[in-house]
Amino acid sequence: MTRIAIAAPLIIGVMTTACTIVVQGLAVSFTLQFVRRQHSRGRAAVAFWADLWIVGATMMIALAAHLSGICLWASLFLLMGEFEAFGTAFYHSSVNYTTLGYGDLPMSPAWKILGPIEATDGLLMFGVSTALIFAVMRRLILIRFPDTRS
Image (tube, rainbow, N blue to C red):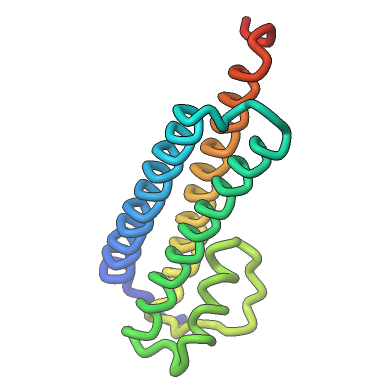
């Protein structure tokens, strides 16, 4: 049986997760500023296409944040020498972050605990994005259809 050290990968994984939290927080902040600006300019909740633009932009900001998080993890894997090319590290990170879990590019036993940590990070960050998209849509609905307030 192979002994797996947990302390160092756990600390590194938590630190990387903290970085993705910052990235996601910046995306949330940017999205809120964007939606408020659209509302103050009279562009929010006035027509279907205007609202679709706002929701679509919100989703693209979330996507950019997720891709940035995946890049952070991929960079960590490169730094640790787990992969030789960024494309391979990015693919591996994408599979972990999205919890797809192909398992076709396994990491060394010393660092493989980072896979589940990254998967947990991805789940949490997708939850934040989902909540944000829902909040933006709810706000647009409440502005456009005041009779839906309860």
